[in-house]
Amino acid sequence: MGRQRSLWVTLFMIPIMIAPVVAGFQFRVIFNDTFGPLNYLIKTLSGGLITPPAWVANPQTSLLTIMITDIWQWTPFMLLLILAGLETISVEVLEAAQVDGASFWQLLWQIKLPLLLPVLLIGILIRTMDVFKTFDLVFLLTEGGPGSSSETVAFYTYVNGFKFFSMGYTAALAFIQLIIITIISQVFLRLQRRRGALYASR
Amino acid sequence: MRRGNIRLKKILIGIVLTFALIFFLFPMVWMFLTSFKTQAQVFASPPVFIPPSEQWNFNNYTAALMDSGALNGIRDSMIVSLSTAVVSVSVGALAAYSLARYRLGGEHFSFWILSTRMFPPVASAIPLFLIFRELNLQDTYWVLIVANAIFNLPFAIWLLKGFIEDLPVELEESAFIDGSSVFGAFWRITLPLISPGLVTAFLFTFVFTWNEFLFALLLTRRTVRPVTVIVQSLAGGHEILWAQIAATGVLAIIPGTFLVLFLQRYIVRGLTMGALKS
Image (cartoon, rainbow over all chains, first blue to last red; front, side, top):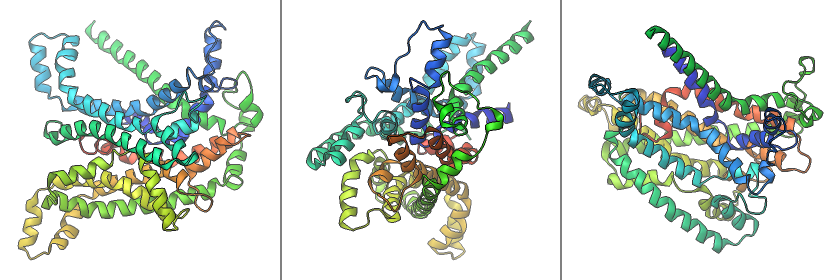
């Protein structure tokens, strides 16, 4: 599996390393309601039964498009993280469970998932902190619109600071974000402090 | 029977993986194909999936490089990213050494450094903007290098700290016994041994800076325009030249895509700042 696996992993990893600006542009083309491939596929595959939304131009789906783009770009990271986590689970534990007659699902739910929990938590925390900063994707896909339907807090801060130049208000916004991020990052740091438990065997 | 089962399982896994891969690679493939289309083919409905082979040409690429300033953008991104990576790794290695070996400032200090990595850049963009305006450094390479180095240093320090902590202290101690100075031991023993870490930190900070958009947008105007700003400005105009932007996008993701190959072994360790090794 060795070489083949490394090829798979490499291919999956590419989205992580491309600029969010470019990812945003890619999805703006894909989500375009007149010439984008997505709506064309939905229309033809459903035989014209489903009328797909205008995605970026529709206030009900604009935030969803940003989420889909971010999920597209960062799911491979979670994949790699969980893969690394799975590799830390010692074979002995799994074998012992199998000897005791654990089924595939029991093995998954009662052995692997609990052992993966710290890894999953690290992944969720890192992603939460990063998504909190989402700016590039919003700028490229929707510019916060239509209206303010897809304004993330980072974009809202930018608009107030660099479009309206209300510096005091923006500084207050920055502080609020700082407090929220501090709380989340404290949890992350506590976990990292006990990272002996998370070290993967190399 | 059992062998057939395993075979079926392998085929099923292959199918699932292939579908997942199509999902993750399709946007990039589509952009690549778009970069070879004419404006009419971009707007065609039903969409042109693959432009006819005899029409393939590099018109969009030459137009992007010459008219839209993608060439200058790549040059600017290259200067800023290389400088940031050099600064982050050289300062980061020294800082990581003192944190790892001398516990400088105790545990709280090193965690404080890490916590700056989590700070939302947009919140710091305003003070940075005001400071650089006072210093009259706006729209220079310096602004971007300093701003990006600030945000990449914690990353580099923590990554390298992990690599140094993995080395046995005895190596340096025996160098001290042989009469080496602290810096001599660091330069001749530690640095060569953590060279994979140095390369990883360098490549990561390079890609992060290359992909960076917020500072590039806010702290520059006309003289310095990194490639991410160029992609955005082309996509924000009134008449959007989709195929040309796609060509610029393809050029802009080349470094990241290539570096994935080199970073593969350390990518999890890098992106979790050492919380998890693989």
